[in-house]
Length: 212
Image (tube, rainbow, N blue to C red):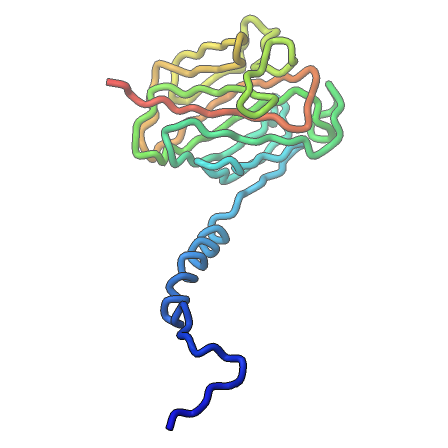
């Protein structure tokens, strides 16, 4: 004779058996572990922080205060040949033309070392400044690649012979006539000026691959 089930316990079988329930939970556990294994990195140096939170690359180091003698040096690894965006935030008070490292003064000598981990060669590399994410930095916002200097001597790359600046309708700096092979590192030097400093701005980095 069959034993009666406890009062209030349904006689229907469970919708998910323990095995099925475990298989449903496994992907969630994997995604959680993956997210914990690859956290967003925020590096702070000088008066700024630098973040790879928008994805497609990772920051591996940051140092310097932003002067010509001690530039802000950002080391990166790009895992793609499509544009990625570096997020920059002021971490100290904003004071135009104040002492570098103690305040965000709107004058940032920068060096970016980029490891090409995309498995494709890069034949050009472009930087674009944005005060508002995904919107062009217009001429009058004060943010630029030193647009007041018509003959800059602080723009240089280890892998590209020439550069071109554009200030309308975008603030862009394009390096060309060179190449960065996979698993090689390229260095880029430039000066960013912002005469009306903001707490947050962005640098879009666009590696270009051969089209033929």
